[in-house]
Image (cartoon, rainbow, N blue to C red; front, top):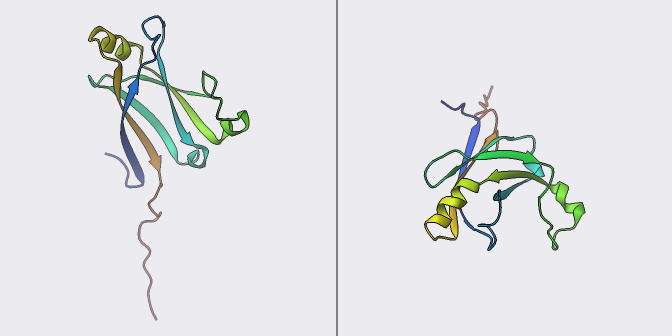
Length: 123
């Protein structure tokens, strides 16, 4: 059972595969969390549509170029790379171009005061 000061966020992501996904040896999805939550985030987990756990790895930045995002801003985020190669292969075999992921983020003491209750007594 989770401790009362742990907040869980679950998100369903529909990721459109790149056009060259069938040629790639590895297909990854980049997930970002603002650096403001670096002290609160404890874990990021990912599952595919078949409820299989996917490999999630913390990385220093994206594995691709982002023209709109200057390199100065790359440090404003925590970057996670999720290996979706098997899920992408399953989708391509079914002639689909979208992979559905479930991301779960665990935070300690986020959006909940600690301690949760403060008792005030009048004299």
